[in-house]
Image (cartoon, rainbow, N blue to C red; front, top):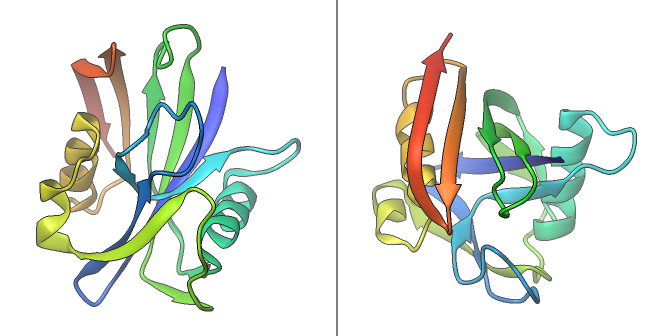
Length: 152
């Protein structure tokens, strides 16, 4: 079982996206993602996302909002993954050269043109509803086979 976080920093009609190009054996190689990663021992979801955003971008997210929780059964073919999805509408600091890939501010209406996970297209639509959601997304060999979502 893996516990992860992701954050989409959105400001002035743009979203900060990470083009994953630098990590070895990366299941998300060449995909565009938000910022985030795996929990360290003893971290809360908020601790994890703040640390991950800072490590990957040099930024401190402001006005974090927990938007959803996603379950990915056997995402890597073996282990379930549980992800907490956050958004932030502001930040402090200056962008650094990320060890994970290349960071770029992308117009919100262009995000769907990027090479993103199929399920992430759903997440962006769900975030627009401004309600908390839980979802289960079933991927088989990197293809989204089915999903469920509940809004609160």
